[in-house]
Image (cartoon, rainbow, N blue to C red; front, side):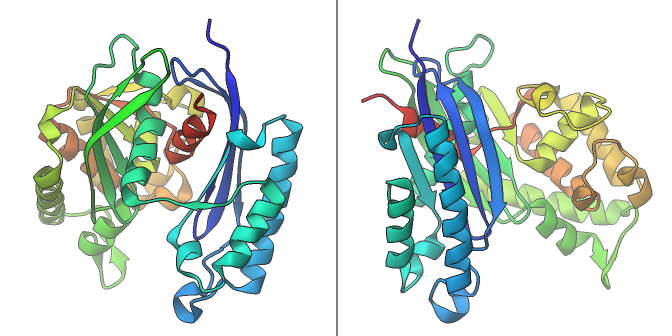
Length: 330
């Protein structure tokens, strides 16, 4: 039996900072969560305008880091098992050294600004890592991350040799066709949401999604996947509806498997429902009511394009990938 490794991952974005502390099985990549937290700190406040991290933004962020450091120490995580990943906001700011020095002083490790390729790898490992070596989840894996403004496609393999997880990302691409962007582009008229949208509006949105899939396919061989892994709110909401949950249940949703026929049925239901009907669905978050139809349609068209008979739903993302990298044995 492999000894578990305890690590801590911190993901500091433009708006929020997230913490994950967990025990990792290096052989399987499975994570036992000990702590998941998120704070809104708005580190990127005003950076585009001033080129500097605002003093109040730095204060908020370092205050959150101080709280996280106490939590990390309480769980006995050694410094060499902590990894702090930051966004380009900290890289581009003239006074970034203040941020770097502050984080290092509080946590004992400096923040890292990673490349787009490494970000894709960490997201891929975080979402698909647990599937490696498990029966019924055959590589290569295609991770489909449907966001508000864009959708990410990452194709690759994960092996489980004696030394632990090893990821091989074959290709990745980000396409500007998120659920918010598509809704605003196709379903809004004079600021009003089509409720429900006409067949013509849905057809136009479908054509836009298909064009986005064409762009993704220029770099990512979509049809080579054997296991499609979907993540983010559109996918997890569709899963919650498919499971007929009375309320959002992360444990029930994580690693559920949705047949394409069920996704098609739910997508058609969402696109033909009114705002009130969508809002009445027990698992529907208020902020997702008007954009879930577009998100579900992206999922459906991607499944049809890849030929996937089902999608494996994941609640895990880049934060989990950061933890796996932090906990990796040398």
